[in-house]
Amino acid sequence: MKYIQINGKNFPHPLDFQMSTQPNLTSQLTTMSGRNIADVNGWTYADMTLSWQWLENGDLQELIRETDPMQGSFTFTFDDITTGQPTTVNAIRTSVGGKRLAVLDHGKVVWVDIQLSVSFPDCYQ
Image 1: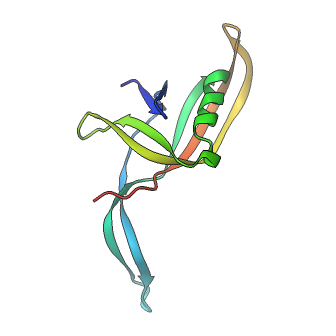
Image 2 (image 1 turned 90 degrees about the horizontal axis):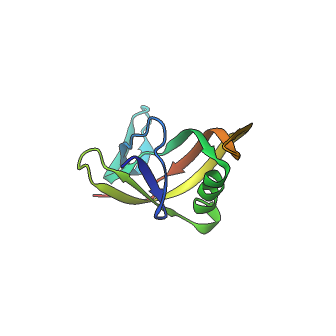
Image 3 (image 1 turned 135 degrees about the vertical axis):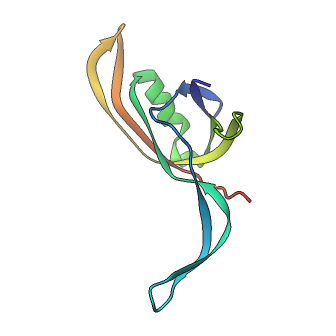
């Protein structure tokens, strides 16, 4: 897949995109000696920032609309590197940024250096 899907809509594949996982820790505490102790109750996808070199104005507006935090979570579909199969997870946008470029691409306004930060709230066993 040369693209990702957000709420079922295709968007260009982000630069250097690679999902990673991390243990999901609960009941964390630090002992008097400074040692950290926690229960591992599964795993989750690590928070990440998706980056694009450029997007057309319409694509960026749709990306912002589809990931609106006021709507709650959105579905995020990508190719899993271990299985090679499309995988869909829930995600929450934490921030978005970019720069408007005055240069027109075939009459369309483009934005450059777009970054979309997301977190993944679900835990897996």
